[in-house]
Length: 214
Image (cartoon, rainbow, N blue to C red; front, side, top):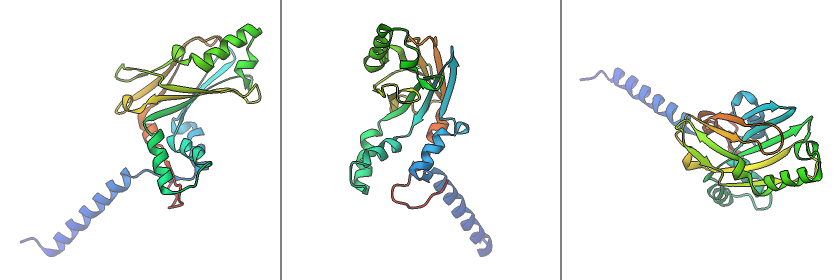
C-alpha cells in the first residue's frame, strides 16, 4: 500500500512534468511588430548576409504569419479569416532575397548599361529558378516553387525577391541552404544556410491579444 503522501507527491510531479511539455510545445505568441524585430535580430538565426565585390547579399526567413498579417489588412480580422489565410499560405516556407550596393538597390546601382539592366530585370522578374535553389542537410535539392520580384524603381535600399519553397520538402532536416548562382551582379556563387531549429522556433502572431509570452 502506497503512502497517501507519497502518492500525492507522485501525482503532483507528474502533473507539472506534463504541463511543462505541453507549454513547451505551444508556439510563443507575439505582436506583428515584435515578430518583425525577432526576424531582424541576427542572433535568432533567421537572417544571413554575405558581401561580395561591394554587393551585400542577404536572405531572411519570412514567417507565414507576417504574410497573413499583410493580407488581413484588406479583410476583417477574425478567427475564420486567420485560419483560412494560414491554410492558404502554410504549405510553403518563405524567404526574402535582398541585394544592395552601397546601401542602394543593386539592380539600379550596378547596371553598366541599359542592356545589362534589362537582362538583370528579366532574370529577377521571370527566371529566378534558373539561378536559385535550395539544398538540405540530407543532400536533397529543393526547387524554387514560386517567387515575386518587387520592383521599386530604385527608390528602396535593396533589390528584393520573395521566394517560396514547398514546406514538406524541408521538414525534419538539420539545415537548409539557399544557393544563388552568379546572375549578373558580380557576386559569384553565394550560399546562405539556416538551421531548421531556428525556423521552427519562430513565434506566431497573437492576432487577438491573448497574451505576449516572448
